[in-house]
Amino acid sequence: MKKTISIMTEEFVNEKTGESVEGITIMIDGVIKDLFDIIKHEKKEYSDNVSIVQDALMKGLEEIKNTI
Picture 1 (cartoon, rainbow, N blue to C red):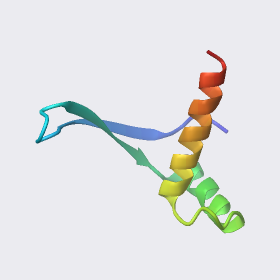
Picture 2 (cartoon, helix red, strand yellow; picture 1 turned 90 degrees about the vertical axis):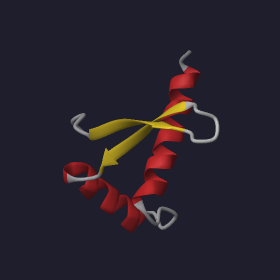
Picture 3 (cartoon, rainbow, N blue to C red; picture 1 turned 90 degrees about the horizontal axis):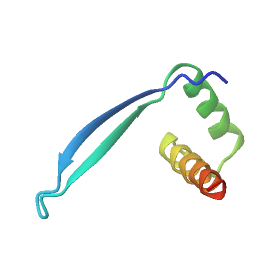
Picture 4 (cartoon, rainbow, N blue to C red; picture 1 turned 135 degrees about the vertical axis):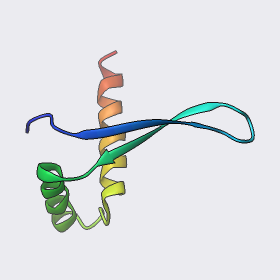
């Protein structure tokens, strides 16, 4: 799969602590939307796009960590 994904970042400030945090928005469209739709249809444990992104992110980070 081509590495085409739209991601936007924005900085937020925690009102209680004043800490700056990065917010990330992922656009789910095109080929990625098609793939997510297939995953949701075939794997009932994924009920929405957020659950797919969470699982993919955690599995990907674990894989990267294992190469360190």
